[in-house]
Length: 272
Image 1 (cartoon, rainbow, N blue to C red):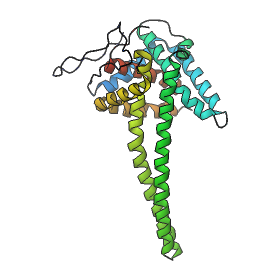
Image 2: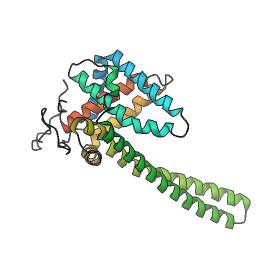
Image 3: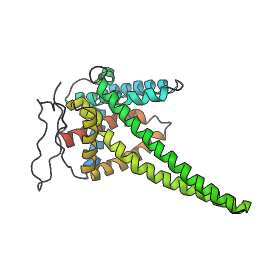
Image 4: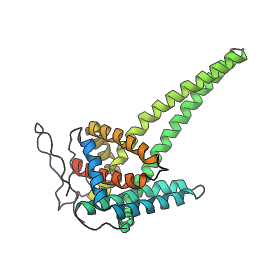
């Protein structure tokens, strides 16, 4: 069984969620872990995959089949896929916990959260989509503002060549500003949703409280998560090269790594 990392010697002991207690809607205590744990989370995620590779491959194949099928549905398919993501992710986390405890892993774990947990997980998904909608509103307003001002200035020059250059420059500046703004807004949103499904599934935390605790946990553990993210980006590139087939392995390892990082930061999940 994977053990959570201990707090640094200089820090006072951090109370953890005990193995036999639930949080009663409140998030467990958050621990800060060393930066090197960002690498160990991926290694531990790989070990969880290697402990039951065939069930994990089957789970990954079913997951991608479900999501790709939904994406083929016009208009509502993409939204349905986004709404189901936390529910299926919660099931994958339950599968990672089962492997960690030496229990058998089955495809049924992927759908284990289609029950009482589905409602709170769907609320997390809706809040996440609402966050992205707000980001796109801000980005659209910036694009209209910058491109509109730039286009007006280009027309006032009178020279067609100079006008074209000025218009392209305005568009380029708008693109840079939009990328910066999107990063500044999207990163906090990702931080808020990263541990939220695990908190809902393992600790019965309410959706808003789970997203708040997830954001704080990511902020407190910014360095290990930065290391984890950079390594994950490299692994994602490698997984995509062989026609995307590497994701059949990387997706289960990702689920395992999220589970291990949750144990490190929030403590071992309580039994059902």
